[in-house]
Amino acid sequence: MDLEVKWSPDAVEDLESIAEYIARDSEYYASAVVTEILEVSRNICKLPFIGRVVPEIANEQIRERFIYSYRMIYQIEPTRILIVAIIHGKRLLDSISERFEKIT
Image (tube, rainbow, N blue to C red; front, side, top):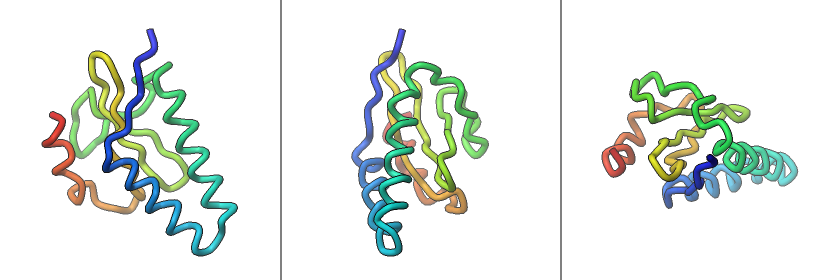
C-alpha cells in the first residue's frame, strides 16, 4: 500500500530557497534540481525504506534520499510520509534539529 506523501512547511520553504539560490546562476539548473527533488518525493511512497537511516539520528523511521548535493529527509509514519527537510549535504543536521522535536 502506498502511503500519502506530505511536505512540512519548513521543507517547502527549503525547496523554495534552494530554487532561488540556484536560479541566481542558472534558471535551467534550478528547474532541473527542483524537478528531480519533486520526482523523488512523488515516488518515495512506493519504497519508503529504500532511503538510508539518517546517521545523526539513528531512527529507523527517519530516512534520507540524496538528490544531487541535497538531502531529502523524511519520516515514515503509519499513514503518511512526511518530508521534513531538504538541506545541502554539507550543512549540519543540528541546524534543523528542532524540526524533529516537533514531529517525534
